[in-house]
Length: 203
Image 1 (cartoon, rainbow, N blue to C red):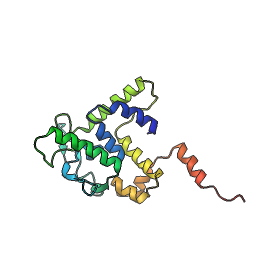
Image 2: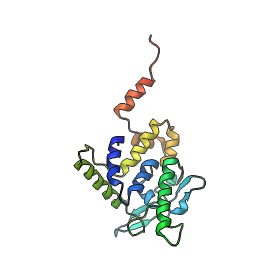
Image 3: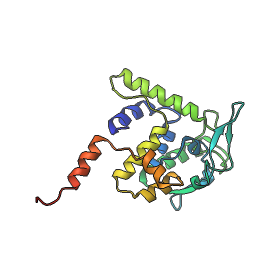
């Protein structure tokens, strides 16, 4: 998703309950289930580390359920916080402590409307509504799912010079091929910039 498209959509996400959850997914590349399942005990604010240890899913009922592990063994990982991620976490912490008399480290960082486990589908619906509003205001943007935040994070990471192996660890993939084939999308601007960097002597 381009920066202009993101700017338009986040303008209309701004006052929704899922605004910070969407920002967090864009800034870290975590899956929506990992975002929903994140608890305060997983946030090491002192050392600036996020521990991804579980994921939220839907059972056959269907109900939101919190798993006791991640999607795969490799998905269990630690993500360092940069200033953007830290800002989102601090905003959520302020919201949390100002709305709770008792603090529990098992409470969710990005809860649903009732304060319980958030629903990934509900986040997706909020995103879709923001996209509709953006289009209604003249922004020519495609509809995209919350998973596009993960794609966009990966592509931005590649452009920022993060090595493929490091990106693989941040995304929680078991293979480098999966990381590069599925997520490291290249657009026309990337190709132009890449060719500029490959200029050699005139033979």
